[in-house]
Length: 176
Image 1 (cartoon, rainbow, N blue to C red):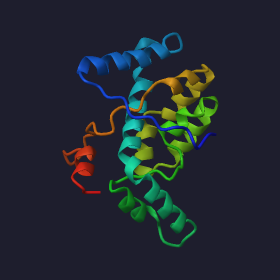
Image 2 (tube, one colour):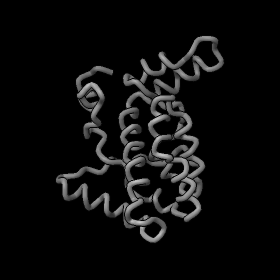
Image 3 (cartoon, rainbow, N blue to C red):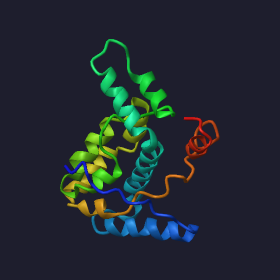
């Protein structure tokens, strides 16, 4: 795995039609291996995963340092890691979307490792999508080209929270 994959700026969308075109371009990668009615089984969880990745990007290093500090300790690290992330979830993996894309030959293995390092609540959401089954199916279909799709999106786009705000709003207002 290449931990030094170059980071590129996120894709910026100027209109809803650009977003729609982008989603269909990702769907085109699935054509032939998935029925059109099943595209959402891949696109929706990847979208959620990417949003989680964006929300955690600014605090990733702090969470990793806190995890190293607390690893093997007698006290549950979960509340400390949530505090460091500034949101009610975190990821302890050194991987992120750019690093996943930087190793397309091992994307399924790395993606599963990445997902397993999310906090229990975030992992539960991804498990409800049966995402690991979809990753296996994508791997069997040799769809490493999904790693070529620019799924990064704009990290400032709002991810709606149960409290009615957005994580992007929280990060821009300094509530981390």
